[in-house]
Length: 300
Image (cartoon, rainbow, N blue to C red; front, top):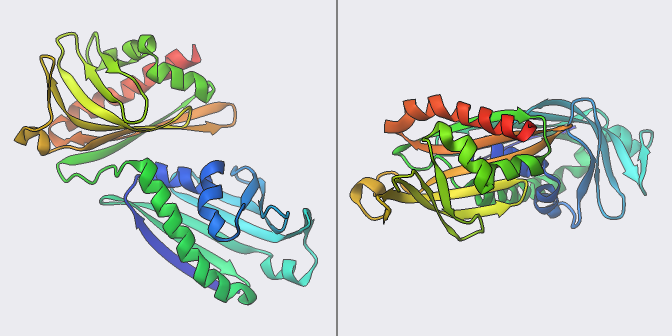
């Protein structure tokens, strides 16, 4: 066996990098550098069998040895797949047996450091030494695209909040972004909070109190039932947008990202958000209450 160690810094939160690593659609994109059409069969739960395949049904079979969400994943390879059939007895299969592929996600200033430690048979060394850096670069580009460069503004602090909700992603998504339910869960910020605009990519959206004070931004990304990114651009004061004042430019752009991950019969909702330092104490107190309200409405 040869052991490889690669690291790459990604300007995105760990939740975004984790999503790109393991989400079916995203996995197919970054793993295409190994073989066009690469995909996996199975799930990422500890103890689950997982298969990594080409369209021709060739590949590797293994087991998920450890999974600490947004932190660490370990896959123990067990053998090969030949024409769709698991093979544990051939010389090639035995060469891969008990080879580990480990991913570690570490929060750093400005994003995430992704580290890969992988054991590979000597026969595959030259090929994988060439292709693994390309795969990590593809993963970086995808994660930064969806991650909104959370936390890159030096005036901001990055916070991540998660809650597990006993409801499907479609229900959680509706509660988050439907006008009626949005008004309900956001009352913890200010009574009468509402939005003006829509959630389409590129649309301007305003988050307002009844006095017409609040925030203005643009929808940076929207993948229904999976991920939404808001790029905040300024304040709204008495109904007038302020995106140019020196005070506003100290903290913009700031991102607010929602990631919905299917977990067995439930949904894990993660919010990654840039918060101005002066509001840190207030939002640390109120965001958990907001997610509790989303949870109660979704489960209802």
